[in-house]
Length: 126
Image (cartoon, rainbow, N blue to C red; front, side):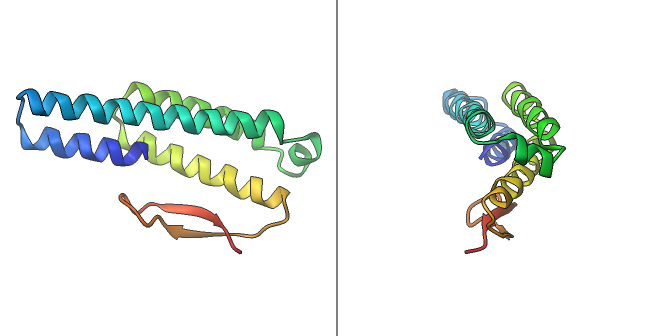
């Protein structure tokens, strides 16, 4: 996730090593962070454009603003190494996931991710 890459970058920065290995690792973490943020934005755009209909917007009137917020947070996650922003992105995506599953009539649950960082994620309660 974007948050994980930012955490890895902070850990690497804290070690203070500025040799070639440091720069290589940092470049890779940044590339993955940006890839994950863009993938999240892409997936939300696809669901928004191909699936969300007027009846969904009527039932969840804030969904348009939420999608816009996700796009902005995703862009900021790509541009910066701000962990708080990345956590906000995850939470906004969780809100969107709850709406998505609700439109399908499926209840959701929140649970800690089984990987680092163990942030709370939304899952269908199957």
